Amino acid sequence: MLYRVRQFYNTIYPKINTEELEWALKLLPPCSVPLFKSQPLPEQRHALDVALDLCASGIHNSHLLAAALLHDCGKAKHPLKVWERVAIVLLQKLPRQIWDHLLSCHSPLSLSLRTAQEHPSWGAEMAQEFGLDLHIIELIREHHDPRSKEGRLLYEADNRH
Image (cartoon, rainbow, N blue to C red; front, side, top):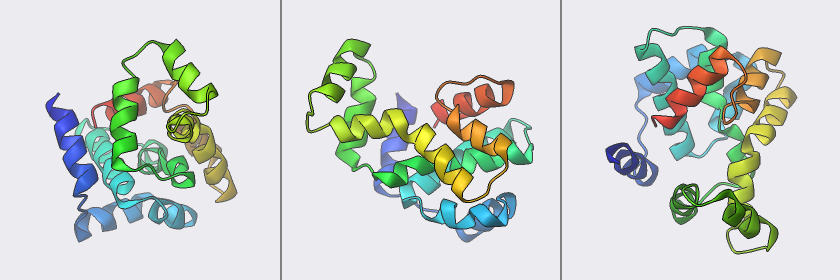
């Protein structure tokens, strides 16, 4: 519960200091820097938190850290407002049938829910357009449905933030 409060605070008041930004930009392949910067500031903050979490766990795999910094880049296709983020977190606790119904009935939340569901695919497509390594693209694609050990590490770090 406390992490959700911290997450909400970081969404409303996202801050990235110069050292963190420089660290992130060094980790990213140069072709992906514009993709990272295209993310809204709360997404950049979250991405940094996920990458820093992985590093604190002793993980220094360059592909995994780059994927951590870019895993939510697909959300830039439809940046979520704070109320949409809160609604998504709350709705994730409901049965899947309700989520599917809200998606299909064109509710006011349909686009937000679609973004929450589709952003891994959208992000992978964007990463491919920017010429990223296939391994990074696949980690972005699977960050909500991990199929590899690295994907699982990214999934777990993402869920902690």
